[in-house]
Image 1: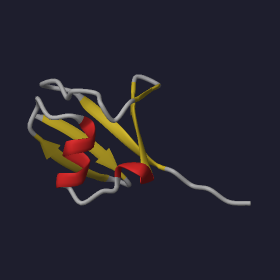
Image 2: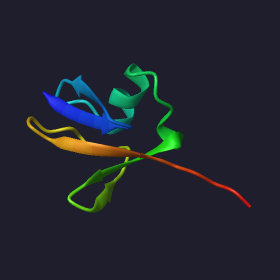
Image 3: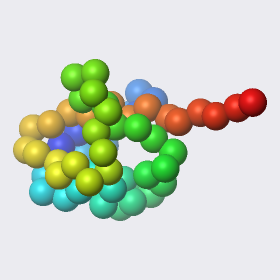
Amino acid sequence: MVILKRKGEAYTVPAGKTLEQALRELGILPETVLAVRDGRILPLSHRLEEGEELELVDVISGG
């Protein structure tokens, strides 16, 4: 299993899916978050690996 953390909540998803697939299944629009592991941003094509923990950071824009 993989743990995705966002705003104090933790979501568990199965390993083997891409990050984009997992986000969509959780009802999170992939364009609205960045996935970070060990200080590095992961692409949506990243294949989730067993035991991973990723932090989801909301994308904020303004002007």
